[in-house]
Structures are given as C-alpha cells and as structure tokens.
Image (cartoon, rainbow, N blue to C red; front, side, top):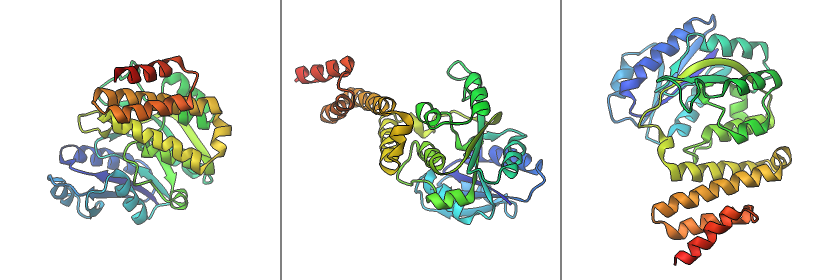
Length: 298
C-alpha cells in the first residue's frame, strides 16, 4: 500500500484542489492507496471541508505543533510501505505517483526516490523548474551526491516517495526544525540509504504569502542548525563534503544572519553571528571588514 500524508493548518481555501489532484494522480496507479490528512490545529473551515471527504480519506486532528509534528503523526498512522508527502497548498501532476511509485517498486532497497517540481504561477528565478534542467539531467544520470543536497535546495518533499521503514528507523522529522526540516531529513536518509533522482516534474509549487520561508532570520538560524546537526550526528560528512565547502557555507550563513539582525536593530546578536562567521572563515576580507565596522560603529 501507498500512503499520502498531508499536514494542514488553516488551508480551507487551497486544500480541496490539492486533494482532488492527488486522488486523480493516485487513481491512475493500480495500487491500493490511502490519503491521510493531519489537521494541525486549524481554526478556519478546514475541519468542515474535511468532513465532506468522510470515508475517502483518513483524518487525524491535533493541537498546532507545526508541519514536522503533523507529518510524524501521519507517518505513525500510515499503513503503506511507501510514504509520499504533499503540502496542502501544492498540486500533484497527473503522473506524479505513476513515476515515483513505478520506480520505487522496482527498487525496493531504495530509501528515497525524488524528482523535480515546477511553479504553479510560472517561472521563478528565471527558470521553469525547481532543479535547473542541466542539473536535473546530471542528477538522473550520475546519481545524487551529498554535496548536491548540501549546496542548493534541490529536494522537495512534495516530489518524493520514502520507504516507511527508513522514516521509522531515523525517527521521522525533527519537530524542533520549522524551516529546513526537509533538508535535514534528506541528508540523514542519504547517509544511511540509497537515494535516487528522476528527471521528471511531478508537482507544482504554489508560492503565496503564507509560505513560512518568508521569515529571513528564522530561515538562516534554522539552516545553520541543520548544517551543525549534520556535522554533529555524521562527522564523516566533513570528509565527504570537504572542510572548505562546509565551513564556507556556515560562515556565509552566519554573515547574512548578522546583516539581517543588524537591520533589525539587534546589534549584540548581529555581532555574535558575525564573530562566528569570522571564526569559521578568518581570512575572508569582507567578514573582517564588517566585523571592524561593527566595532567602530559604537
């Protein structure tokens, strides 16, 4: 069986389209499937909307604890051998599950298979797809390396299918991470299980004002935490990635965190972040310059 897990928090306006597209994609695949929606403390009409689907989906409700906690609830109740995730504001392509499930069933030892995604409202960042076409072809032909996941945001949960056994063995999502939980999970899976990529577009991402990634400071703090967690839990990652890449990325994030906090008037926290950037990349002239400028500002 295949299980779809959808976390939902106040998504009355968008969830119906998502469920209809997902069921259409699922029914095109000759395999038993279930749709699990975890209502994460919605206060709008989400609960009433879900009642209209009674008997066709499984619904679980909990107090608002964030998308990672909602997904973990879905995983615990999933009866399928493979678990696919869909956000309540994104749309599945008609052949979404045919592509992913077809590959997964032929490669049962795979911990994760994922593909590409498009943008519902048209091109973003001067490209048609989340993973640029040239890189998408390379990943499909040569395989996914840890540096591919580490360097750029190429992984989207909505474009993935994960073995439930892998999710359970790794403890699911880290519920303390609110932005970047997908990056944390995919790197942990990569360190333990085979990961495959397919050069196909299987979903459309809907960008809107409710996307949590809009909080720049939180996004940077969480990204730093994901990297530091990887290094703590998998020390071999430094060898696989190279010290220059790892410490350079961390320093860059700390530097931008410092600039973000400085514009917000959080001077002490900005200096702390800037000191971390200089500590990680002591010969970077730009970081040194801004460190000196922050001292002279006083």
